[in-house]
Amino acid sequence: VTWVVGVDIGGTNLRVAALVDGARAGAVRRPLAGARTVEAVVELAAAAVAEVTAGAPADAAIPVGVGVAAMLADRRGTIAVAPNLGWRDVAFGPALAARLGDRHRVGVYNDVNAIAFGEFVAGAGRGARDVLTVFVGTGIGGGIVADGALIEGATNCAGEIGHLKIARGPDAARCGCGGRGCVEAYVGGAALLARIHRELAAGACPAVVAAAGGVAAAHPGHVDDAAATEPWADALWTACADDLALALGHAITLLNPDRLVLGGGVLAGAPRLRARTVAALDALVPEAHRRPLTITAAELGDDAGWIGAAHLAARGVSLV
Ligand SMILES: [Zn+2]
Image (tube, rainbow, N blue to C red; front, top):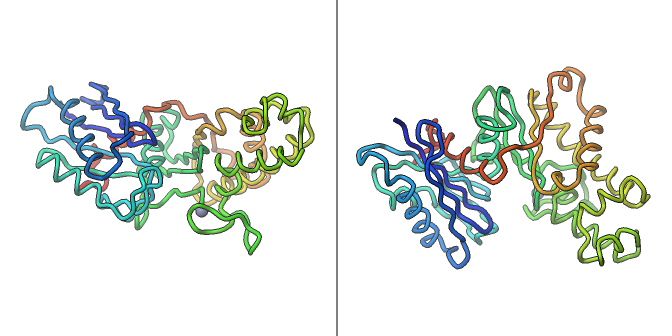
């Protein structure tokens, strides 16, 4: 019997669960509110790991995989920046490993990389070999599985599709990463919402404001509903689909995946935007790349992160 634990450190919750011979066993969810220092999160995670492994043999070596919304610094568990937690240059993997003791080795993974691997093993990427996963939520994240393995990169930052540039020069939009012209700065949920509110406040489309019940309540779902009838929404969605497709097209041309898994709140709530983005890919990707490509929606929801982190740890990826 083999045990492995997956941990997902999200914006509001810590989720921990075990896989025993690949089957889920035990699941714990703890709110992160009030527990955001490194020490507090280490304690919270360690207690939850102990809880979900209480039934394991005392001498079993149990790897622990952790997915976290962060830019990583290396393959040894160092977090460069975790905006949700306010962390910078934190050796989280070694700290958790030290707290857990000799039974457990720990792997730390970017959240979307973990999600991508979870979807590859157990979700929308099942049966494929080369999978590109892209989530459009508050930001835009990605994960690359090539020939069945996660591509981590030299500093564990591979897959950061949100920071592919789609514009250059002094007028290009500023991004949270410090750069300019990143696709996330145009179509990421936070940037998109700001743009929608700014244009609606300037009088762009009273029908959308009325449907939403005010400018501040308007979200991409309202624009999606209006895209078939309102010229402003139609034009905005065409521009956004073209921007997103440009980044996706570059990645597909470079990686030649057989599966593209699309997920995240923005695309899930905006089916017209998703459909236009997929349609726009045809003009941006060579036929040899487009032909083998199947495009699917993410399937595992909130479970993808811990499942993927557990499977990465089980394979020994970047353990400390
Ligand atoms: Zn950026």
